[in-house]
Amino acid sequence: MNQVFEHPQVAKDFLPLLRSWYEEAKTLPIWQKLRLIVVHSTEIYVPLDINQSPFNVGLPIQLNPFSQKEVQQLARCYGLDWDDGKEAGQLMNMVGGHPALVHTALYHLSRREVTLAQLLETAPTATGIYNHHLQRHWVMLEEQPELARALHTVLSAAEPVQLAPILAYKLGSLGLIKQSEGKLVAGCGLYQHYFKDQTI
Image (cartoon, rainbow, N blue to C red; front, side, top):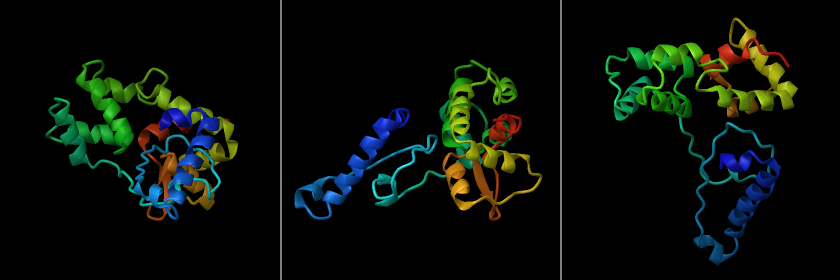
């Protein structure tokens, strides 16, 4: 689905089509045989009319961040011996339990392309394994300066802060921020390090 989102016009045509199929199933028996399962990443934010979005109907199931134990189990699947929890803790300090970021790290580590120390040192830089991921976010923030300013407010604050609900929702949907005791902080160390010193 991310390939669709990279082309906004395609997304704006395709996603309302999915919603129309869902609406058809309410009244036409033939459409009631259709079952839609839409799996999507919130990495790319596509603004849609609320009445055309397929994301505000049906049963939403959100993939929560991995726990340290789950990161250790996944590392074991990649052939890494992280049973003492030290390495998993170090990785989680950088990327939290973000499933895609954890998976990317474990993939590169299992292929011996980089050590964990090298990965962590270069992660928030242009030479790190997350370079393309971070650049995609940066391009989106450049196109929406209001979001960039709101993110900068969160990242430069010494304490968790509050934002206007719509800004918090958009940045939260992108994973760039998260809630901490009802207020907002960086989504993970990777975003804190990379975006804190960036300017629009």
